[in-house]
Amino acid sequence: MRHSQQDALDRWLAAEREGLDGEAEAALLELFEALPLAAPMAGFADRVMARAGLQATAPADLFAWRPLRIVLGLVLFATGLGVLWLPPVLRFLAGLWSVGGAVRGGIRALADASQLLAMALRLWDLLLTIVHALAQPLAVPQVMAVLVLSLLASSLAFRYLRDQITGERNWTYVDPN
Image 1 (cartoon, one colour):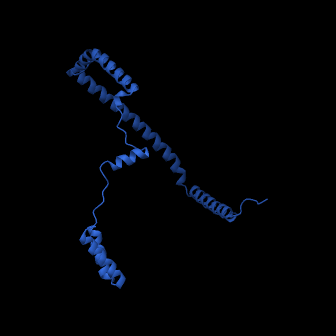
Image 2: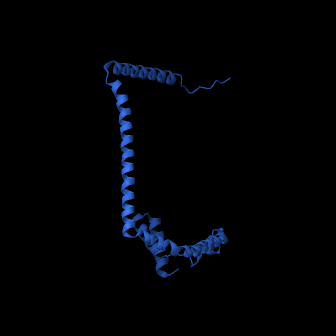
Image 3: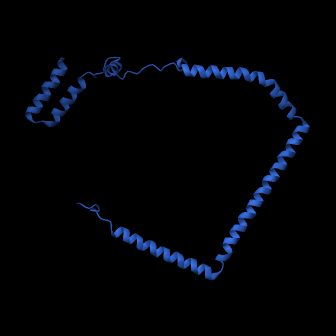
């Protein structure tokens, strides 16, 4: 222990004996400030993890996995076969890009769109007919009154059933015998 540390220790012990709390705290703080900071040596965390069996392993080489290598080989083979089909496909696509082909494609798209619109309008007409058939009887006051009375009766029945069920609930539902 160095002389300054010994002096701080002596002052702290003397202040504690005499009951001088303020001086004792100051001397103790000076003593703690004189202590060196403790830091673990380099590689400490790695050694602890290795001892615990949780050592970080190096990531495995993904391409060393045999199934992935087989899949990559098949993909490369399919790409090679695709190169053989590329010129005829490009010739076909170039034929579509002519002015006549563009006009034919536009006319075909317009005809398909008009057929879809006609189908949607027919479906809409059918739905309107169904809605009209359901709404027409509801416009009659007698039918509406019967429906309201039915709704009231079912609401009361539901309320009565709920009261019955909740009234029978208790903490000793199971027969102890």
